Image 1 (cartoon, rainbow, N blue to C red):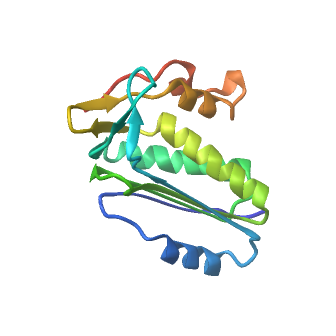
Image 2: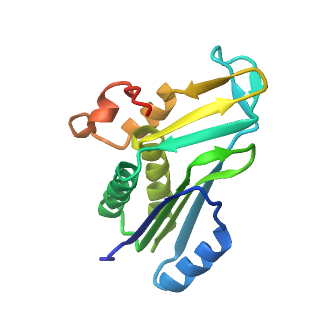
Length: 178
């Protein structure tokens, strides 16, 4: 049984994947799998109808300091309780980001690839639906707050039995922007 080390950061600065990879490589000698996911700002977003795509000039990410880190820590602890993981690193950026800039990093080490893949996917699904972040897309004509997509909520719900669903996943996300 592994004891999972968890590191969670919310920051405005960009992150580099290579040093984190090297760190996990050294700290996870018993692990056969290191899984990394990097999410970035899309150049184009579908409009409300889902038909045409609007070019993104920037994405503003806001969060609830203190609460956000706590939620990310809790999500990482959930992943560590479901799969035999040795390390989890979650980094999420905030502030004004341009197209193709990195937003989020999920890095997981585990003895086996299936567990590493599953934990990484679980963490991203939960981040998209439960973490207190708010995104405002800006393009040439306008700016608008982006709401949770039904597909993101469905992806997050699939990891739970109905009676185990967290409150935020039982109903459509509540708009609580600062």
